[in-house]
Length: 391
Image 1: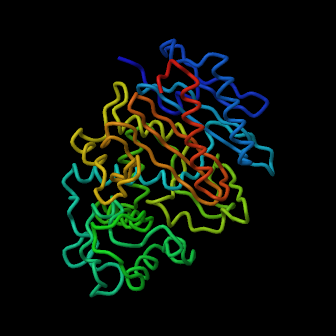
Image 2: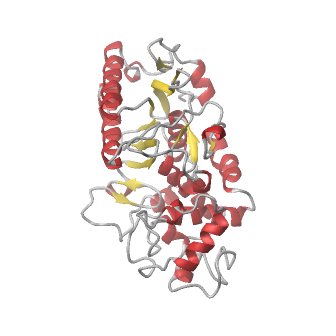
Image 3: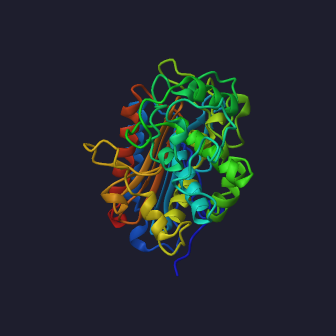
């Protein structure tokens, strides 16, 4: 049986930090020889990272890779805090933005496996999971038709991630006020199930579903029932201000006038609120996808459902959105999710060839799509620079 590592065990086996700000690269003796990056390959990865950082003025970049459930590379580049000249290390926490959504999806599916939820459960109204807890009843058109599955697949019929996104309204509101205001004031445009529109607010509602079903806060339940079984103990929901910076968390830097500290990130918990290291995310991926000999958090049939694309997703796209994941080949190919907030760009990928990786930065540029695509391409370039990984 192949040996697997917790994050702390991994760190103990990593190489020491280099003075140039390149920290913590993994190379354990038990790894198969062809999994270990050679000096030349490590140099290639460093050059790829440096080019990306230069192009987008990135202060800190952190990456982690696993192959068949085993860590093969975990390294940070640059500066976590410019003002205090803190070099980035692989143990630095970053806001992960929408890479949160797969975590919320997996949590929902574990509750389904336990018989506490069904995909077709209504969310609002007398028979809904949340009943009439939020907003004023009777609800506006279509709201009582929304199911858990509509929220997972971004097909609730409205509340899209555009200029009307309710998650970026008055940052002084708590979740209860925000949800009630949205239900009362933002009309759904389509009947649920007919139209795909990426919805942060929909995943905020899934967090409240988790709380209602479990009787625990979203953060506490996920930490205890999803992250702890993966060996992850340091992930937490982010604070909003620089003063609320968690221990070992990077500082975020906005570009083009963006201020990473003028958002209510804590309120985004279940759609974009987690702090993590790249190795945390890789551990999560390994435990969801049953990489190597690691048992999966979910049953095979559950995974099939979770990675089956929504028929409402635009057909022209090469990838398809399933339930909390972008996928190829109906889930038999790659799975991934990216994330973007002022001060944050993130990516998490599981490949069909048995690799898992994650990359995190503490900035973003405008247009955000450009740095998101470049981060994704950079991670693929790094993976392909080591032929033994077979990316």
